[in-house]
Image (cartoon, rainbow, N blue to C red; front, side):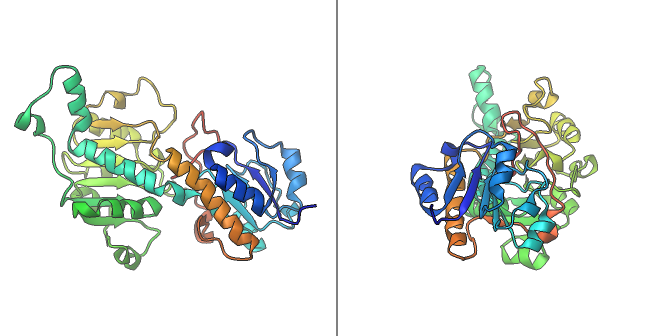
Length: 349
């Protein structure tokens, strides 16, 4: 019998090969006794049987029900979706000393990079110019930049300043922007220590040339950016939405972009796949992306690397450092948002 601790590896909806590079898959097998480790979801009865003496669970979500009472040996739950499963009993995990870890940091660089790309596509009208050129309707030189402006030196506002915000701050540093942020889960002192100035949401929207919406969806921030607040955004400014559509009144956003009030780069939508007839598809001032910001190969493989790194630490009796640990004060406030047909568990960047 192997003496490694038993770990249930049930990453569905993710696939083993997409998150574990061969070297990390071998490290995983060398570190723990892998149970299941397949692409299809583990049957619930089999999961419950194995959970009784499992040291950890690697999972794409928590679809197993109220089973923690039977998990006497459980020390960690590592989620590979990038979010916090709202179905999980976080209070019991905290009381039992079961660490809950998320792969969210693995997505930060990829989503930040895409966010910057969407911002530049909007501020410099790159997608609109490409469409015009292909149609033989391009405008040359000065005539073609009437509505364009530079990111360099602009005031940039972050709505939410977590993993993605910090990664994006570093990416846009060469643009020498003035950085401001609204995040009710962070203190003003912390924001200042991270190089961004705290600012009330209404003032941020009124005065920022580029606005990045990066907030995690919670029970408190549905449609946080209401029609009234969106109407504060200055004309021709750019709003980039990459966290979740949950945070924005999407109908109001659509109306205002169609009216030419401001530009928008959008990677997430209220339902995915999205209504083929939705009017946002006709908005010239919008750059649209099909929820692609975080799921590049490098980011997915980083999930597996971080999972194995933290399992190695846990097996040695050390604290995990590579994944993000749940904060008990916030756990009950996370919510499930978009359900994607090819991603039935849901993700969060």
